Amino acid sequence: MKIQNLILVSVLLLSAAGFAQKAKTNSQAPKAPFIAMFYNVENLYDTQNDPKTDDDEFTPAGKVPWTQDRLETKINHIGQVIAGISAPAMPDIVGFAEIENQQVLEMLTASALLSKTKYGIVHYDSPDERGIDVAMLYNPATFTIIFSEPVHVELPDNDRTRDILYVKGKAKSGDVLHVFINHWPSRREGTEQSEPRRLIAASVLRAKIDEIQKADKSANILILGDFNDEPSNASITKGLNAQNPEGVISSISLYSLLYPYLIKGEGSLFYKDWDLFDQIIVSGNMLSSKKGLHTSSGDAGIYKADYLLFTNKAGEARPNRTMSSDKYFGGYSDHLPVFVKFGLK
Image (cartoon, rainbow, N blue to C red; front, side, top):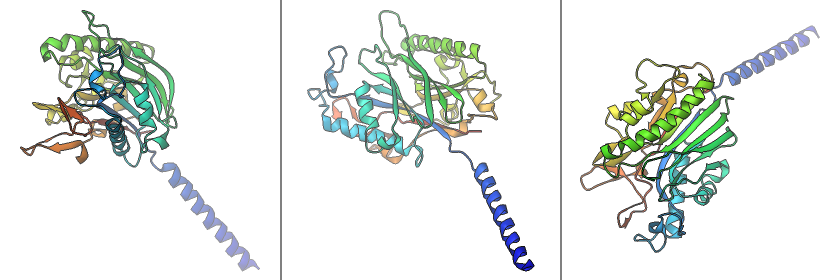
């Protein structure tokens, strides 16, 4: 009887030890990262003519007919990119440029590859002449919206551009995150001639960030967008005061995480050469923090899946775009998406 009791006690002790070890292992298991991406999707228009905007080109009667089939192909392509950029995980935040309206965003969230995530939408109509806006999708299971608003950029001579989208929310770690989605004025008239307009956009965003940091010096700030400038241009380094992250980090300063890619000659779009207009900028506290959301330049990148590129006759890789001039190619976009992964502590 004593031997049986001894065996029973030994079995119980071993089981308890195994359970404790399993619980310890589970508690120490790394948490899934918090993932944000940005994608200029190159003219995601519906097929309807909006009399208030210059969208005639993107209708069935356009120079390159923009049909329902072509729209649905583009929706499926964008869904493929979002589902693939951090597979098997889905991004928690997706920022966009060149979205026409709420309707195309609803088509996107209902598409086959995205519908299970049940993405929420943050979108406001901008005053841009072409009717294109910025927008954001978010996974409501991992990011809770606290507040959002469009931040207007006032340009001289009645010129109009996209608003900056500001979203304040709480990540799954419990940390509050301030997100800005941008699409700054283009270089259509030339880099130098158009630079003052991008400096105005930078000053508007900088003022909003100063307001946030005045209330909370440790605020987590994430800036995504197509800035039509590179990390080394004046609108970024002087107007926004965002710097190369490969150096001494100040918790309240801003850092362009893709700056190292610029130094290597890599880019997110191609015009005569590779340009890095699509950027991810964060506040320094998320680079130096040991708590909550944290990241590094090594956790950010340009997504260059083979299907997003085509090889020209010279053997050079270029973005596989939807259309150009009077030709329809059926590709994805003239921009490559960019992404960043945040660790959680």
